[in-house]
Structure formats: structure tokens, C-alpha cells
Length: 82
Picture 1: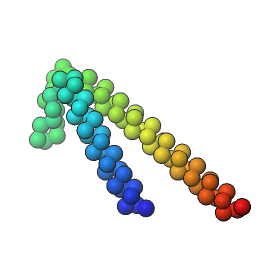
Picture 2 (picture 1 turned 90 degrees about the horizontal axis):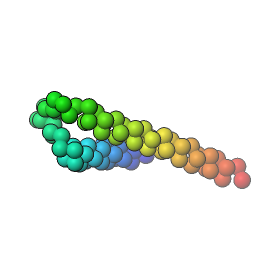
Picture 3 (picture 1 turned 120 degrees about the vertical axis):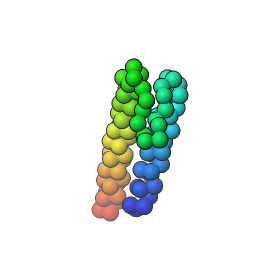
């Protein structure tokens, strides 16, 4: 089960990286250099806004996953006691 969760987390991270890259391209912001730092200047606020949006989406996704897992446990418990 931990392996599947690790794969899901890796996939989610990759998806977020792709989304960030796409948003960087759409907004015309410079891409990260080889050190992973951005050569920006005035576009920093716009990039931070994009990152904030991704973080919020990720947090909502995590909360939804937790709620779904709780619901599955409740269903399993209900089935055990029938």
C-alpha cells in the first residue's frame, strides 16, 4: 500500500511540475535555470501567485483524499459488523 501511495505522490509531483511549466509558458515568465532558481525580476509576484494556486489545489486534493479514505474505512467497518 505504501508503494502505491509513493507512486501516487510521485505522479502528483510530476503533474504539478508540468502544470507549473505550462503556467510559466502561458504567462511568459522565465523558466528555472539549472540550479532550480528563477531569473525573474518583476514577474516574481505573478509566479508566486501561480505557485500559491498550485499549493491550494494540492491541499484541496489532499483533504479530499483523506475524506475518501475515512469514508472507505467507515464502509469497511460497517461491512464487518453486518
